[in-house]
Length: 512
Image (spheres, rainbow, N blue to C red):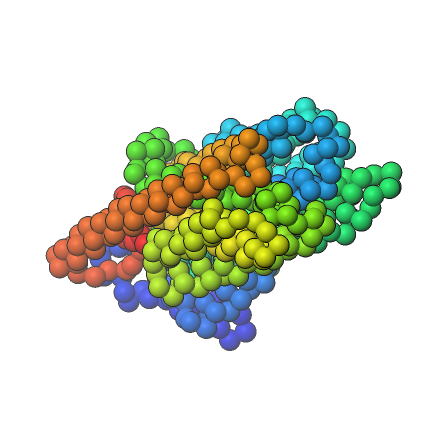
């Protein structure tokens, strides 16, 4: 027995080992990152688990949030700049502004398959920090670009390197947190999107007052956010471990406990070897297609509203540019509140897909309001309120990530499934601005009608996804019960570090 923290000692359960087969299974570990730290007989007490979770919350979660904050700031700066005379200054005409968003997402789509394989092979924390350094340099370049060709090129490269962020954060989260904890954690780092929106709007409001300096107001905005991103990259490089077994602040025995506390995920930590059969399974799994389409139908709406929100407030609703910056601050606040609410409801009910359907309804109502209520001095307020309500649908994206993180196993399969999902996310975002054709300005009726169709498709996909996962769980539970009748009950989750896929692992259970 080993002392690990004051008077807290890990408990073991050798008495639970009933057969020689159990011992053989315990010795079979393919997970390269977990190898040497695996012991299925170790039993964590509730006190151990709470203590470890508190340390992870303090040392890991803030760094995940910083990483996502950087991406949200860098990617969203153009939206704030669009109502700071940036469009006129760089000579953007027609669909040029919409294309600045589309080319960014095209960069993500192209890079996503390669990014996920790099994540599987390279140290994740160092990869994340390096990516953020590159983003900050590219954003600085955009701040000094005075024509559209370099803006398009830099935005494409920005997307190319930002393809790392989502898969890295999910992969790190799965290494440190149990399935039950992941909804809360996903919500926390996703809340940085709302934080970035509010923070960028506040910065833009301040810089908007700089009208006669050597640098334009939107250039100061780009420079400031670039410096913030670079600083965050340094912090992440220094303090974020590449995995629980690489944490300098944990003893060897604590590392073993950190590994064993995520055994029940049945997802392991990391395996660098590529497995062709897992790639085939990922590409043919209907669940992968569901995740792709859920992301597409979600981001076709969210991406368009995010890009053209400022222009809707000014051109369609009749507010000034200065007021539009202030009115965009509550957008970030609404996003944070709805993300937190989504995480709470998913954890409380265990019904991710049904929660996503519920969060779609307010957007349908808000869209109908924008279609039917004509702008006037009396209706300005209600229209902005409807626009705020339409931010609720954005909380479905972190819920999709919860489905992705908790329902995919096998390191090669996960890397492919992550790539498929984030390609869907990027594809929807790339197409979304093109739904706001400049010929339909300022109220974009056609765009809003297309959004109504997206909501219907999203609800249908959510129901189909839930049915697929529910059917799989029923089959796995029936097989486990039949096996238990014949062989009796042994140690749980003995296949957790064998690098099996969610379909291959009989112990794996899907979260609906």
